[in-house]
Image 1 (cartoon, rainbow, N blue to C red):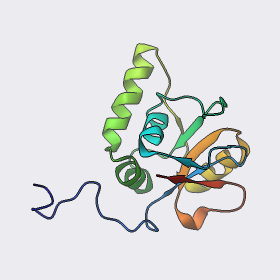
Image 2 (cartoon, rainbow, N blue to C red):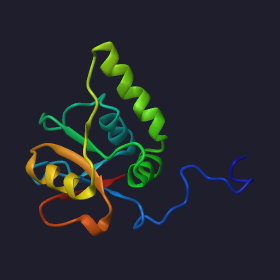
Image 3 (cartoon, rainbow, N blue to C red):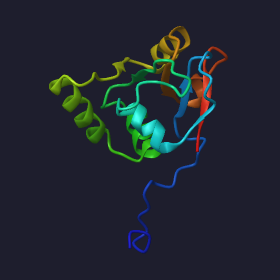
Length: 135
């Protein structure tokens, strides 16, 4: 029905325009499914498949890059993700991801934190972080 109205979910966006998933170079997982990525960013999955702890970094909810990543790559809205984090924090069952203020800070934190995961626009990529493919 939505397709008949010209509305598609997730929105049709060129892959090169979407922020990409990036991790610390020590992460041994080269690709993740959307469901696994969503579980990690929702803070429900806390380890990589090899058992290493995942440290999740995100930009603020009002940052347009965060909005694009969450909507285009995770197929949820930023407020839905925030509600999940708030529920875990307030119930004492988990914690929210670490917020960073810029993509430069995101890159630096991911490059220096084993097990780190986040997202960047392609122009911020360098050889200190690795791109994780989403299936």
